[in-house]
Structures are given as structure tokens and as C-alpha cells.
Image 1 (cartoon, one colour):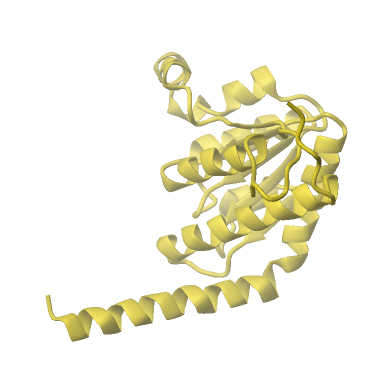
Image 2: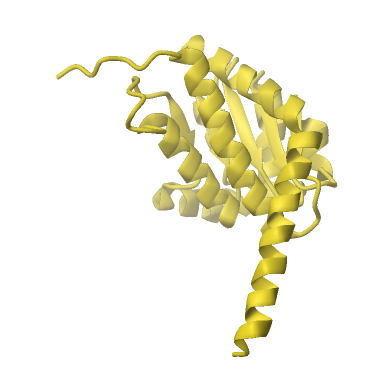
Length: 203
């Protein structure tokens, strides 16, 4: 490895990531706040956040659900918040894929778990993942709020969403990096809206 070339490539990549996050602040801020407000409203009404995505976006779904159910920061104690990643139960996922096909992986779970007023957070860098699109369609049919996280094109998913956060990039890796930042920000905004003051832990 040529260390000088590697260092230059690394600097260029990180600069692109930083530039994109600045663009997200300019282009997506209103949609991020809108999404956070809708999710907070759902939690305040004892609703549930359902999250789905494929590949890296599946990992995002699990990460975000964990932030709500466990904790975002230890210095801000609060009760667990009801969020569920639809990407984690391998027995269920493989059964649905085997019985109904992979496009139904998330839609079947939305039908089973989703209730009117819940939120589906659907993550797809392209906005065109068939199983995510079908989940959004089923969510809308059941009167769930649909929040989409996509890249710049939005794909078919953006048109199904009540709020579409379109990261202004077509580079998958950078879209995913921005999605993580947006998800962490949404978790923070929601938590601080519901629990602005840390609660005293109980035994």
C-alpha cells in the first residue's frame, strides 16, 4: 500500500462525507424535524415505531430500535420507548420468505403488528427495494404513518411516504452514513421531546 495515496484517498472520502452531512442539514432539516414530531406523537399516544430495511439498512433498523428501547445516553435516564426492528427474527423471516416470497418479509409483519397511528420507518438507499415498498403499501392501507429514508432519487418509496427524507446523494455508502446520522438525530429529538428532563432511576 502506498501510504501517501491511501492518506489522500481517505481524506477525500471523509471530506465527501462531511460535505454531504452539511448538505443534509440544508436540504433535509424540515423533513427530519417533521418525522421526529410524528414519531414522538405516536409514542405519546402509546403507539409503536416499526423499522425495516435490507442489508446495511437492516442493521440501521436494529440500531435505531435499540436506541429507543435501551437508551440513547446513560446521562439522560428515561423509560424504554416502544420500537421494533422487523429485521431480527430469523425464524419468522425465513418462514415468510419460504411461504410467501421475500417481497413479503416486512409487509406480513406490518399486517400482524401495525396498528392505526403507529409509524413505519422504511429505509432504502434506492427507494426501490420491493419488500420495503410492499411494507409501506401495507402500512398506508392500515393507516400507519410512513416515514421514508432514501437517497436523492427517493424511488417509489418517497411517493408512499407521509414524510420522505431524501439524502442528497446517489452514492450508496455515503447515503448509508448520512442515514445513520439522521437516525441518531431523530432518536435524540424524540427522546428530548418526550422526556426533556432526565428521570430519576427507580430500583
